[in-house]
Length: 280
Image (cartoon, rainbow, N blue to C red; front, side, top):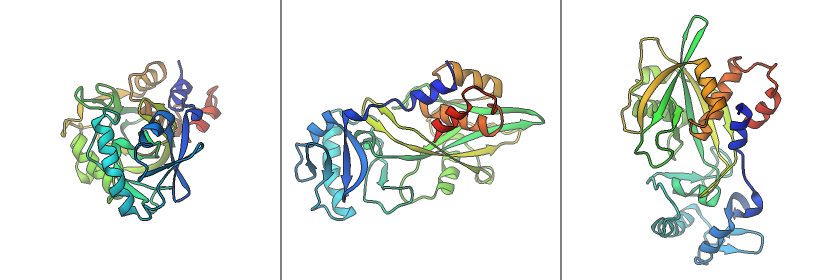
């Protein structure tokens, strides 16, 4: 296995199994054919043609769309189609920071193939030339990817909070990192992927931040989402990422991006150009 294998795993999809999903003639997602058949039961909300699925144009403002789609998603939840319901409302946009076309439950995004945005934080300790990374293990009781390894801190980007404020919030809630430290996180770009999942499609973007922590600081589980934190030498991190699937799938990309920016995956690597292309 290799770093490139991890990238390929995050980009496995077959769009021939999906219809493009439109709001106001703007594509916002991809809906798998079996889900299209379910949504055909709601003609007041969705319009379906042989090639596309769209929100009913009579729903001509974000408030009407949000109100109309809510009971549909709740019915799908009741039917077991939308697992891991979160009670978290996220905006549907055509680009990050754009005007919301509607707001809806986060867990439903893959079912409609809508792009979600999140932020992942690489926590690390530098001691001279030696570098170690803080790695989280997700709680065994989490509804998604229980027990998997994870970046030190990660979370979605809900409506009504800036990326910077969300970093501080997630650092406190997940790892007990005080704002005085969390606010030092440095934005380091983003990674993207398009992965077909049992619920549908995840064409997501994760913003990446790097946070150097003092050698004497240890993150600690706070909100129950993390079981434990480990401080690993970078060689061990590289080995686990490249040779196993122990990490939650998108966390691999965040770490690979970090390794490239820090020179641990150098330009001489045989897959260097393919890795760069695959992360974006």
